Each structure stands twice: as C-alpha cells, then as structure tokens.
Image 1 (spheres, one colour):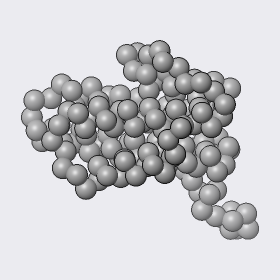
Image 2 (cartoon, rainbow, N blue to C red; image 1 turned 180 degrees about the horizontal axis):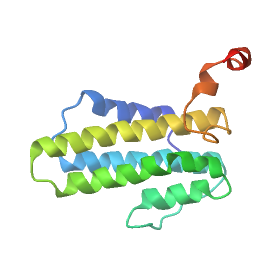
Image 3 (cartoon, rainbow, N blue to C red; image 1 turned 90 degrees about the vertical axis):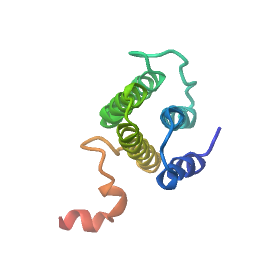
Image 4 (spheres, rainbow, N blue to C red; image 1 turned 45 degrees about the vertical axis):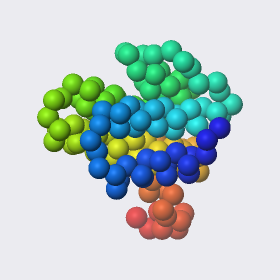
Length: 144
C-alpha cells in the first residue's frame, strides 16, 4: 500500500508543473482513487473495482461512506473531481484545459487532506469537513 504522504507528494508535484496534457487529468483522477484506496486499506476493506456513474472514484467513495455517514462530507469533492475530469477531456482550448486540471489538483489535494484528517480523527466530517478540531486543543474549542 502506498503511503498517504507519498500520494500527497505526487499531488503537490502538480502545483509547480505546467499543465499541458489531458494525461495530467487522468493522473490526478488516479491519485484521487489512490487516496480512497488508502482509506479503505487502512480500514481493512478491499477497494472495489466497479464504477459508479462511469467513475471508479465515485464507487470507492460510496464504499467508504457505507457505515460511516461522516464520510459523506467529501462526496461533493469526489463528484467535482469527476466533473473536472470530464471537462478536461472535452475542452479544446489549452487555457480551459489548464484551468480544469488546476482546479482538479486542488480538489484532489482537498480530498487527501480530508482523508489525512479522518486518519487522525474519525469524527472529522460529522458537522463539516473542516479540520478545526485538529488545529485546536480542547480548551481552545471550549472558549470559542
């Protein structure tokens, strides 16, 4: 199993690399899948190979959310990644492709941060996907 830190490093590599190819979108989609595979592996589940609405990412999300309603906090992130992937695959303009892939990178990074937070605190996502509980001590949270 690839470590989450290794996956995050590959996602971060897209921050400085120029986006010029549709293959970048394919790579980012695969990285998003790897993030969810990491979560499933860490929780003793075998990641599915099937697709939901044409995307394995959405099937992996559905599998991850089963029995864990707090996991639905990242449902829209996964759906937006799929949308940006479709956009990147369909645009002809290089500028539009660049924007679609750049947005996709940020979304995949957000998904990775959510999973990283879930690994630290299983309750993350019960109210929102904000990592506030991870950044504050109990006494600080009581003061707010």
